[in-house]
Length: 115
Length: 111
Image (tube, rainbow over all chains, first blue to last red; front, side, top):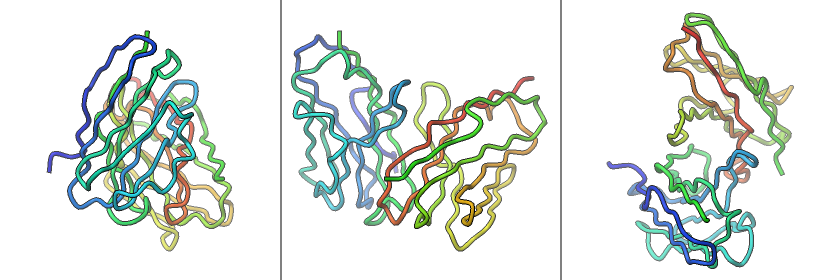
Protein backbone atom coordinates (compact mmCIF):
# COMPACT_ATOMS: atom_id res chain seq x y z
CA UNK A 1 0.00 0.00 0.00
CA UNK A 2 1.30 3.47 -0.89
CA UNK A 3 0.00 4.96 2.33
CA UNK A 4 -2.03 8.14 2.59
CA UNK A 5 -1.40 10.27 -0.47
CA UNK A 6 -1.77 14.04 -0.44
CA UNK A 7 -1.41 16.59 -3.19
CA UNK A 8 0.02 19.03 -3.80
CA UNK A 9 3.07 18.87 -1.52
CA UNK A 10 3.53 22.62 -1.66
CA UNK A 11 1.14 25.38 -2.60
CA UNK A 12 1.85 29.08 -2.79
CA UNK A 13 -1.11 31.29 -3.58
CA UNK A 14 -2.18 34.87 -3.35
CA UNK A 15 -4.62 36.10 -0.77
CA UNK A 16 -8.18 35.78 -2.00
CA UNK A 17 -7.54 32.80 -4.26
CA UNK A 18 -9.22 29.43 -3.88
CA UNK A 19 -7.08 26.55 -2.68
CA UNK A 20 -7.97 22.86 -2.94
CA UNK A 21 -6.04 20.18 -1.09
CA UNK A 22 -6.50 16.53 -1.98
CA UNK A 23 -6.18 13.28 -0.08
CA UNK A 24 -6.38 9.57 -0.88
CA UNK A 25 -6.65 7.46 2.30
CA UNK A 26 -5.36 3.93 2.76
CA UNK A 27 -7.69 1.42 1.19
CA UNK A 28 -9.91 -0.17 3.83
CA UNK A 29 -9.53 2.64 6.35
CA UNK A 30 -12.97 3.84 7.42
CA UNK A 31 -12.03 7.14 9.02
CA UNK A 32 -10.38 10.18 7.46
CA UNK A 33 -9.11 13.26 9.25
CA UNK A 34 -7.85 16.69 8.20
CA UNK A 35 -5.39 18.30 10.60
CA UNK A 36 -3.61 21.65 10.43
CA UNK A 37 -0.19 22.17 11.99
CA UNK A 38 1.32 25.52 12.95
CA UNK A 39 4.07 26.47 15.36
CA UNK A 40 1.66 28.50 17.46
CA UNK A 41 -1.26 26.06 17.68
CA UNK A 42 0.33 22.67 17.06
CA UNK A 43 -1.79 19.93 15.47
CA UNK A 44 -5.46 20.88 15.29
CA UNK A 45 -8.29 18.71 13.99
CA UNK A 46 -10.31 20.47 11.31
CA UNK A 47 -12.79 17.77 10.31
CA UNK A 48 -13.28 14.02 10.56
CA UNK A 49 -15.20 11.64 8.28
CA UNK A 50 -16.37 8.13 9.04
CA UNK A 51 -17.52 5.98 6.12
CA UNK A 52 -17.46 9.13 3.95
CA UNK A 53 -19.84 11.03 6.24
CA UNK A 54 -18.65 14.16 8.08
CA UNK A 55 -18.92 13.44 11.80
CA UNK A 56 -17.20 16.37 13.49
CA UNK A 57 -16.42 19.64 11.72
CA UNK A 58 -16.24 21.78 14.85
CA UNK A 59 -12.58 22.50 14.13
CA UNK A 60 -13.21 24.12 10.77
CA UNK A 61 -12.15 27.73 11.39
CA UNK A 62 -14.91 29.46 9.49
CA UNK A 63 -17.12 29.32 6.45
CA UNK A 64 -14.15 29.85 4.17
CA UNK A 65 -13.19 26.23 4.83
CA UNK A 66 -15.11 23.29 3.41
CA UNK A 67 -14.36 19.59 3.06
CA UNK A 68 -15.89 16.77 1.08
CA UNK A 69 -15.47 13.04 0.81
CA UNK A 70 -17.43 11.90 -2.26
CA UNK A 71 -16.19 8.31 -1.98
CA UNK A 72 -14.02 6.08 0.18
CA UNK A 73 -10.85 6.84 -1.73
CA UNK A 74 -10.87 10.62 -2.06
CA UNK A 75 -11.32 13.75 0.02
CA UNK A 76 -10.78 17.46 -0.57
CA UNK A 77 -10.28 20.42 1.71
CA UNK A 78 -11.07 23.76 0.11
CA UNK A 79 -10.29 27.26 1.31
CA UNK A 80 -12.10 30.10 -0.43
CA UNK A 81 -11.01 32.85 -0.19
CA UNK A 82 -7.59 32.13 1.26
CA UNK A 83 -5.92 34.47 3.77
CA UNK A 84 -2.30 34.76 4.99
CA UNK A 85 -3.31 33.33 8.39
CA UNK A 86 -4.26 30.09 6.64
CA UNK A 87 -0.57 29.44 5.97
CA UNK A 88 0.25 26.11 7.63
CA UNK A 89 0.95 22.46 6.93
CA UNK A 90 -2.25 20.55 6.30
CA UNK A 91 -2.17 16.84 7.02
CA UNK A 92 -4.66 14.23 5.99
CA UNK A 93 -4.73 11.04 8.08
CA UNK A 94 -6.72 7.84 7.93
CA UNK A 95 -7.51 5.20 10.50
CA UNK A 96 -8.70 1.62 10.45
CA UNK A 97 -12.12 1.07 11.94
CA UNK A 98 -14.96 3.37 12.78
CA UNK A 99 -13.14 5.44 15.32
CA UNK A 100 -9.70 6.89 15.73
CA UNK A 101 -8.90 4.36 18.44
CA UNK A 102 -6.45 2.52 16.21
CA UNK A 103 -3.96 5.26 15.58
CA UNK A 104 -3.53 7.55 12.61
CA UNK A 105 -1.54 7.08 9.43
CA UNK A 106 -0.64 10.52 8.15
CA UNK A 107 0.01 11.68 4.63
CA UNK A 108 3.09 13.71 3.78
CA UNK A 109 1.18 16.96 4.18
CA UNK A 110 0.60 20.04 2.05
CA UNK A 111 2.59 23.12 2.96
CA UNK A 112 0.35 26.06 2.15
CA UNK A 113 1.70 29.57 1.91
CA UNK A 114 -0.73 32.43 1.30
CA UNK A 115 0.94 35.70 0.36
CA UNK B 1 -12.75 18.32 25.96
CA UNK B 2 -9.49 16.53 26.65
CA UNK B 3 -6.67 18.65 28.09
CA UNK B 4 -3.27 17.19 27.18
CA UNK B 5 0.11 18.33 28.44
CA UNK B 6 3.63 17.07 27.82
CA UNK B 7 6.75 17.44 29.90
CA UNK B 8 9.37 18.46 29.24
CA UNK B 9 8.81 20.66 26.18
CA UNK B 10 12.44 20.21 25.15
CA UNK B 11 14.95 17.56 26.10
CA UNK B 12 18.62 17.16 25.25
CA UNK B 13 20.47 13.94 26.00
CA UNK B 14 23.84 12.51 25.15
CA UNK B 15 23.90 9.68 22.64
CA UNK B 16 23.49 6.41 24.46
CA UNK B 17 21.58 7.90 27.39
CA UNK B 18 17.89 7.34 28.09
CA UNK B 19 15.06 9.81 27.52
CA UNK B 20 11.66 9.95 29.19
CA UNK B 21 8.72 12.08 28.07
CA UNK B 22 5.55 12.33 30.12
CA UNK B 23 2.02 12.99 28.89
CA UNK B 24 -0.77 13.99 31.26
CA UNK B 25 -4.43 14.02 30.27
CA UNK B 26 -7.74 15.02 31.82
CA UNK B 27 -10.32 12.56 30.46
CA UNK B 28 -10.48 9.66 32.91
CA UNK B 29 -12.34 7.60 30.27
CA UNK B 30 -9.35 7.65 27.90
CA UNK B 31 -8.48 4.12 26.85
CA UNK B 32 -5.92 4.45 24.06
CA UNK B 33 -2.48 5.98 24.52
CA UNK B 34 -0.28 6.45 21.46
CA UNK B 35 2.99 8.22 20.82
CA UNK B 36 3.93 9.80 17.49
CA UNK B 37 7.33 10.85 16.22
CA UNK B 38 7.73 13.72 13.79
CA UNK B 39 11.11 14.34 12.22
CA UNK B 40 11.85 17.77 10.80
CA UNK B 41 9.79 18.39 7.69
CA UNK B 42 8.13 14.98 7.83
CA UNK B 43 4.78 13.57 8.81
CA UNK B 44 3.92 12.38 12.34
CA UNK B 45 4.32 8.59 12.59
CA UNK B 46 2.88 6.25 15.17
CA UNK B 47 5.75 4.59 17.00
CA UNK B 48 4.10 2.84 19.91
CA UNK B 49 0.71 2.65 21.58
CA UNK B 50 -0.90 1.04 24.60
CA UNK B 51 -4.44 0.33 25.71
CA UNK B 52 -5.88 0.74 29.17
CA UNK B 53 -5.83 -2.96 29.99
CA UNK B 54 -2.04 -3.03 29.72
CA UNK B 55 0.41 -1.22 32.01
CA UNK B 56 3.54 -1.35 29.87
CA UNK B 57 4.58 -2.19 26.34
CA UNK B 58 8.04 -2.48 24.83
CA UNK B 59 9.31 -2.45 21.29
CA UNK B 60 13.08 -2.73 21.10
CA UNK B 61 14.49 0.53 22.46
CA UNK B 62 11.17 2.24 23.09
CA UNK B 63 8.54 1.57 25.73
CA UNK B 64 5.35 3.14 26.97
CA UNK B 65 4.11 2.96 30.55
CA UNK B 66 0.65 3.90 31.76
CA UNK B 67 -0.63 5.13 35.10
CA UNK B 68 -4.40 5.43 34.71
CA UNK B 69 -4.97 6.42 38.32
CA UNK B 70 -2.73 9.45 37.95
CA UNK B 71 -3.81 10.02 34.35
CA UNK B 72 -0.44 10.03 32.71
CA UNK B 73 1.63 7.86 30.41
CA UNK B 74 5.26 8.06 29.45
CA UNK B 75 7.52 7.32 26.50
CA UNK B 76 10.87 5.78 27.35
CA UNK B 77 13.72 5.63 24.84
CA UNK B 78 16.87 3.75 25.82
CA UNK B 79 20.31 3.86 24.18
CA UNK B 80 19.36 6.99 22.29
CA UNK B 81 20.78 7.55 18.81
CA UNK B 82 20.99 10.69 16.65
CA UNK B 83 18.09 9.44 14.54
CA UNK B 84 15.87 9.62 17.63
CA UNK B 85 16.08 13.43 17.40
CA UNK B 86 12.55 14.58 16.59
CA UNK B 87 9.40 16.04 18.09
CA UNK B 88 7.29 13.51 19.98
CA UNK B 89 3.53 13.89 20.43
CA UNK B 90 1.06 12.03 22.60
CA UNK B 91 -2.63 11.80 21.65
CA UNK B 92 -4.70 10.04 24.35
CA UNK B 93 -8.10 8.97 23.08
CA UNK B 94 -11.44 7.82 24.41
CA UNK B 95 -12.96 5.44 21.87
CA UNK B 96 -12.41 7.99 19.13
CA UNK B 97 -14.01 10.88 21.00
CA UNK B 98 -10.87 12.94 21.50
CA UNK B 99 -8.76 14.27 18.69
CA UNK B 100 -6.32 16.34 20.70
CA UNK B 101 -2.57 16.07 20.36
CA UNK B 102 -0.19 17.18 23.06
CA UNK B 103 1.96 20.23 22.34
CA UNK B 104 5.00 18.10 21.57
CA UNK B 105 8.43 17.47 23.10
CA UNK B 106 11.51 18.28 21.08
CA UNK B 107 14.20 15.67 21.73
CA UNK B 108 17.78 16.36 20.70
CA UNK B 109 20.33 13.56 20.91
CA UNK B 110 23.81 15.01 21.07
CA UNK B 111 26.70 12.99 19.60
